[in-house]
Amino acid sequence: MNSIFTRRSVRQFAQKTVEPEKIDKMLRAGMQAPSAYNQQCWEFIVVRGVENLEELSKIHQYSACLKGADVGIIILGNKDKMKMPYFWEQDLGACTQNVMLQATELGLGTVWFGTAPVEEHIKFVRDLYDLGENLVPYSILAVGYPQSEDANKFVDRFDETKIRYIG
Image 1 (cartoon, rainbow, N blue to C red):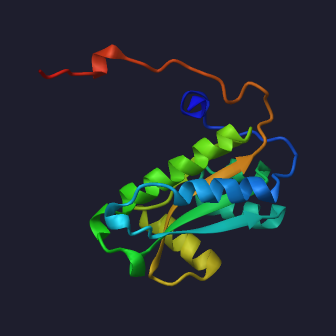
Image 2 (image 1 turned 120 degrees about the vertical axis):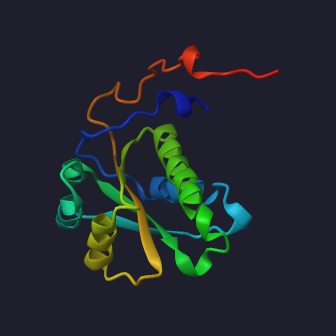
């Protein structure tokens, strides 16, 4: 579980192709996330190609680094599969983190761009990929090999003052 402690937001990527088998492993890890009532309402769009990533990077002002990534992964919630619709965001949060942790384990870097619940971001992705109302874009990950070798390094964030023990 070293990846929990070494994962960082990576915004600068080397010009190196992410192998298809690594993308597959990341998506498999995402699908292993826990989900309420085992609804597994996640779906994915894998975006490759300079022009496609540049277009996706226009979603908001902080997503410019998508242009330098090799892969973009959009994680969507499918409303038709939401048996417990009030927990889908927690499910997709766990899914997103699993993808990121697997990427770190594979020597890749990621950064998470929030999409839901911001309506203009949801609309942007839906319009860009002609998605129906049943698909809700939840998060976008920029993925690639980090430009810096120490991009995913341990930083101790433990803060004892944030813990309360009862009993």
